[in-house]
Length: 130
Image (cartoon, rainbow, N blue to C red; front, side, top):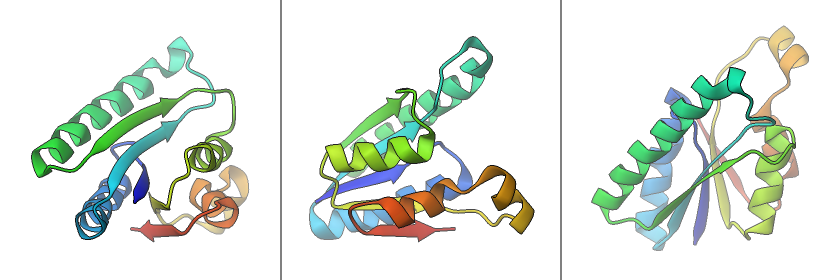
């Protein structure tokens, strides 16, 4: 089973990783850590470094657990939510696990919701954690 975890190192994405570990153990799965940014400019270098460090830390944890894993950091010019859904389909993921956080109605209106888009557009089952 191929399990994609939308992973940035945030609290909600760490919860998603913990659930993915459980699923991978039960279903002999492989975990794919995936993050996406629309651009990778110098102004965003701190964010890029944080995500790369989070991926490296998670990979080390998964290797210690004996779970097959890969990390992918996407900068393909698409909005992150579109990029995540497209990558999952291109790579035939069987399941997507994504962390969510509560946002006000105004926050959702102004910024949208990556998780909501993934839930509605993904070709495979999406599991959310908080």
